[in-house]
Image (tube, rainbow, N blue to C red):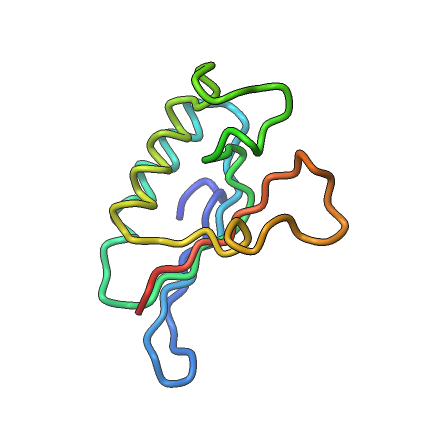
Length: 116
């Protein structure tokens, strides 16, 4: 994709068609929201989606230090990403396994995969 913030590659893995999406989202909320909007059509496919990278936002309040649910911790870009994750039936693989070894308790890791 333009701007060097996302890479979309199609191929096959074990004979199954896949779409790999790598994201390096900007820290600015508005720019991040625009990137996620441009990525949204890439999640509409019959291929298995594997998406990962640095999204520069979190989807769960526990991933941000010093905040509690209900304090408005989720910005507009995070809300859009959460909506996209739901629409595409993606799963936060790292979130389901807990924190990755060697990371701090506040670290937010996300690797999203859609069912085939």
